[in-house]
Length: 315
View 1 (tube, rainbow, N blue to C red):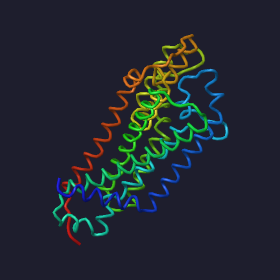
View 2: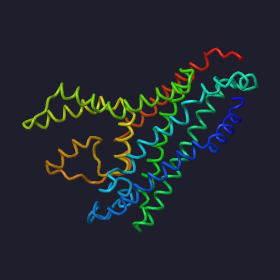
View 3: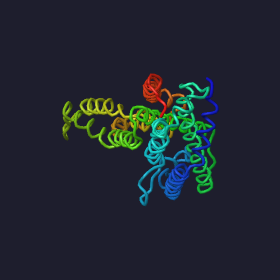
View 4: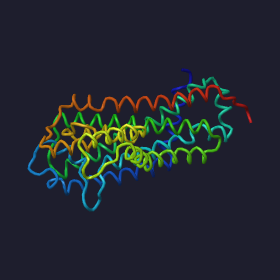
């Protein structure tokens, strides 16, 4: 595609030199380092006498001073990064009158939108890889326990899944940037979708599942399982749920199910979970990963088709 590399280089240079990029990076770094520092102080109490997967426990343990784990911080900040990088990808060029001038050059339309999306995805990848590397190095120094080979692979897969999660929010914000002429409108629309999915999707799923399968103290295991299945099915409309279930199974090898409720039922029944091999953990979350890829592809395909059919006039 003619002009794709030029657009990619230009967008990367603009992103890495912008104050917005620096502020976002500093926020994520400080939040991640604070989370890992608190987790390192409590990791001995959290893992008990077990010596397995101590390094991975560093990424999932939370402390009393900061009751948030590192994946939870990532699930909050990654959408913010994706929205910040994509909400003005197209409409800012259109508003400033640069879009018609850029397309007057020997550059195809698809090269423009593809280059902007790839540049944003590259920035997200650099952010995630760097912050996870810094956090892992800091955690290794604090706890003094080197990771095993499987732990390194699981951490690598965690990075890949986080990039997929960021790609969804990047594609959604690019879609709104194509649909709306004003950058403020596209930003508000993307933030509104994020808040709805993050805060209210679980409430809606709980209300629907509770109405279909009311629970009480005398509820049987089958009734609890029916409620949990419906709750999970509705909650998985949100990409945040797909991301959370994926990284839980990847970073916590003992997760034999993506449902904490079913795990607790099994433990109360006397079934103590044993760590799963990496292949089994991937099979467990394979539908969630496919869902994230599908949602990203649908959002970007809609943005691509709309942009390719849009009439662009010189101003």
